[in-house]
Length: 549
Image (cartoon, rainbow, N blue to C red; front, side):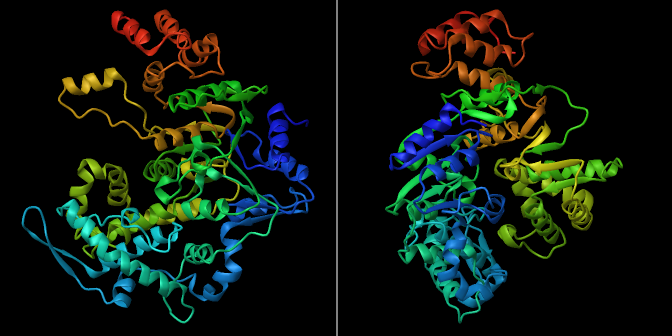
């Protein structure tokens, strides 16, 4: 296949020898483009930097001989990981940290002047969490504001900051213990990667291809950024969904000449149009182009994959299928962490105290109080699953599902689906969408809290899920109305500069719900490119008949 004009442009820019940032949309032929770049930069020795071993293995034989594919941790292992390799498989617990650091139970006074005991194992758990943050940042000393706060109910923010300040030096002690080959403290892969970066290591390559740049953490970004060779960052900022793990989206932070890959080879234009709605709502001013192959959007009687936002929804669907006698041949991915949470919930319910991230709860009633609060709502489905089915039954189902090799149906959370694709995909109903003005008004009238506005990471998660389908997409569960309102409210000057007014009207309005979109809405949408924001607002305000579907 001949390179596209976009791919040729990327190669031409790379040949100039300057740093480059390639923003590649979902399915836009990243690997092919990087192969073209690698050949163009020969005979210079190159490094393809990947995030996990699976990607490296998938590239075997695809890159030219002068380019090595390595993970970040593989580069660090020889000098700093090997000496502590005997400690890498050991598990670090809060109780172990408490014992090794000589920690004791701590009494603190809550805002209600009640004395609250924080167990030594809980303090140990948070020390280990601060150590994880230390390992992800390129600083010899972790700034206090970058460390996680201990989340104990009833204590003030000032108390939380004070506890964090006292725990941070303990985290540095724990890190030193991890890196000491003679100490038996369990070590993490991130620990030796941190030590390697702090050693001032240099990469002996003529160029570095830094893939999935939107998922880089500060440590990786600092390591690559300080190299004197040519650096080519490749990724999609619209797929940056790992901020909760410390990712910083290098595609936004790196200063370099930009190039785009907007032509997707994964799906047709019908599916691209759906993803485009979310892209525009995120403020992306580029048009996602599908292939010429046919693709359909609509109801599916049978899908190759079902994608969900949360583990709880994914597991709940697995349980449902098994109870209906349809569980054979169904696989579930990325559920190991969910099972750990379920077992921890069971431990609390059985009166044995909280463990891991549940260590802050003294008992099950405290967990339930948190779940019923606004901040703990995401845990509620997981708690209900454990209560109804128990950790043992769920563990058996998840183990069985994880062992299916040729699934007829794959259930997955969107985080785990990133980088994968299926012929047909059905969207789960647990994704979050922007609330419409009508939904907000109705909630206010009924005395309810208005629907929560999802953050941009949740929008990007939806974009990832929508772009996993190759041929058929069932997105009936997706509520686009709030996105349409957000798009109408955008400031038009310079926005969507790559699309004509007619394309805007067609792709936002006609492609969503053709029969329901009123002519007045079409007219407003068609003027997005030419009218200013105030003019559009006045039009909408003057005509209350203009309603989104």
